[in-house]
Amino acid sequence: MSLEKIVEKIIADARSEGEKIILESRRTAEEIKAAARKEAEEKAAARRSEVERDARLQASRIVSQARLEKKLRLLTQKRELLDEVLTKAFDSDSFRRLEFKRQVVFRDGVREEAFDRGKFVAELRTRLEEEILDALKI
Image 1 (cartoon, helix red, strand yellow):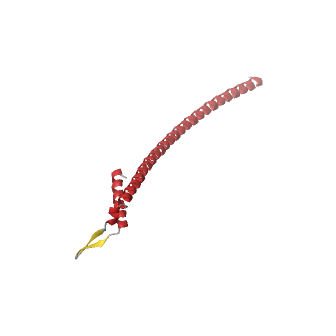
Image 2 (image 1 turned 90 degrees about the horizontal axis):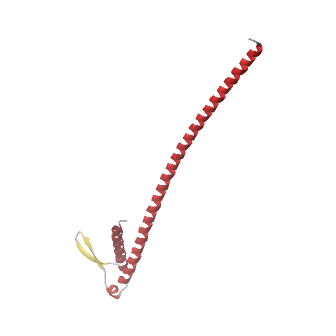
Image 3 (image 1 turned 135 degrees about the vertical axis):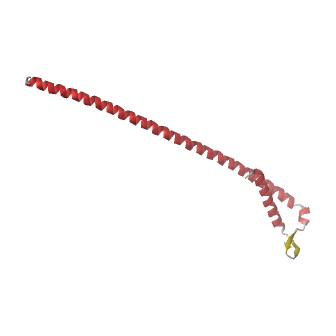
């Protein structure tokens, strides 16, 4: 074999080996690209799921807050109505003429004491508010 044929053979083998390396590199690059694409899609799906869950949770909180605010507005309206009723009832002439007394129980008997009209109204308001809260299930 002549030197020229040996050089041509070496060059041909080198070209062939170079092409194999290039093809293998392209195949590896495609595999890496496909794996990266798959990983990106999985991460995007996971993030999308997380965002959707957070959005549902936030929507639920907003609805709960709106319901609470509605109940509080209703409670405020009930209190205002209760105040109006109590004011009208206890500002009447017949109420002003009443003398309030309460019975206090002791070990040795029962004693009547004067009961402050303001305390009576405050206790009545508290009891009525409790009844309203119970009725509204708050």
